Image (cartoon, rainbow, N blue to C red; front, side, top):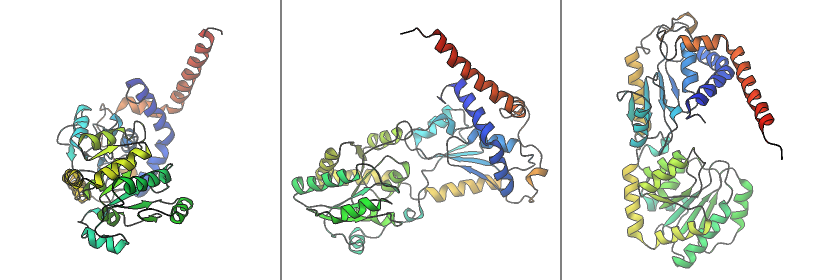
Length: 367
């Protein structure tokens, strides 16, 4: 939808009509030194808000792309002062969308502070967390709110380790906030050593203690697993939004995609009985990890702020500043006109949709 120019234009206009006032009020109330976007749908809106905010030295605008393997075109806007991307493929997509090479910086995906430093020794972590120190471990992660099918995956993984790996494996199941599932799994009698927990705040330690991970294709979890050198089994993904993350994992040979619980269990058991295979994937994963990514991105944003002079600027209220963007630019007169007559354009847009709907009804053949 948004990859097609006309529909993308209408989407941006309607989004602007709905959210412009609230976003502008938020920016003016906080009077920021810099605006950082981590969502694909807000580039056009936020830059238009800055255009209308009467700025002499407005805050610079930077984008931090949080998709690993692919990125929608709406992530990229030519008026952004800087764009930080996690991979070479996404960097090329940004250039294809018209961003200048000096604006695009490949620094990795931002991760939580737990992953900025190396984890403790694996055996020491296992003892601390209640795991057996010399047996390989798989971490099954559901996300903060739990995930459908987690119980089935855990059962199949335990069965496969028991049969194929002669029980030489252990498992950690993180149920997130799904307390009902956590209690159910904790009551279950397992054939291998299993730790079942709810939401954890020290995921870096759990990843450091385990040898591989089963998770959905969220970019943050994948990036953190790579830092810890964990081969990844992706059990599901959001169509469109996370498909590229699956390709990234598979194409770099740091994991696989398996949607069937039985296949997931067999894959874990196969890795556990082949330390050379598991070790090679772990080494490749670690080489792709970027533990310094969060710091590097912050340093980059700070450099943009210094370059734009906003660190030293006087704190002049936004309402008293002049326009930053030149008249006639992409954010210039044309869209000023649309904003001024936004209500009329919204009504016209709705009228066109209704007209198309009724015409299609009239012209549709009777059955």
